[in-house]
Image (tube, rainbow, N blue to C red):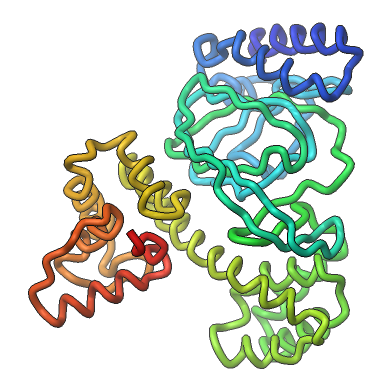
Length: 389
């Protein structure tokens, strides 16, 4: 692997040793060392991947199943910390906190970085809480930017990667945090990121039944949901929602849930709806390599209202031509398939309607038929959060 990574590791180890390996000092040391190293100027971002292909031996790897990164590559490791390089093509990180601390730097590409606050309202156990997520900040990270990673709820964030590839380097502690690392489902759920082995296997068996004997799946799921603790209840409902259907099957299963889970089930509904919205956007992004289309989809996923959308959009596109420019991008995006994405209605002015909704521009609607189309667009799952001005 590149010598620059070992030089960085030696500097971090020296400075941390001077602090008696106090974990509280590690994020600052990692952040300052990454900034000083300026790896984006020293290393070809594809070099670590090429080294893996060419080398006969590589450092021990942390995540061989590539659950985070496409792929992740461990370029340095000792007993106390390690350095990973993450490649991102279409992957997008969930809203999450960290069970470790350190820092990350952007080596290639750019990302929309959103930070959140989570205010807990109901604590079920240390693996599940219901509360309120709010956006603290939203920024564009570009090559050379470095961000500190504190452990736990001090950094709840998500990254939406805009370029193929986006490449980041992460310096992080090896020791686990004292509580499970959590991911967050907008707008209200905090759930342990890693399921327990028996929970994972139970979910896999239920998925098998869903694909082979749907009636048995519904019966067994209902039985399981009435037995499991709250955190696994949330895990199963969210993971298996796609197999529950839209109306009668969903009601038939969930209406028979024990009363003790009714409050939790009601709280999960907004998160499930948002997950559906997020998957529509991510699926559409995976089908395009156009940088402007991918940037627009990133803004749709990360902006929560018109004001935040316009603030981010004008970082890239001129404010005085924003509606016109978005119209052009939507036109390209919609022309790629026989029917528009996101379950939008087909119409010759659809791109214009979508652009005007996002920018808050008044649209000329001369006919009753077009009025109905605009109403449908404004109610669309992907766009309706931007319709209040």
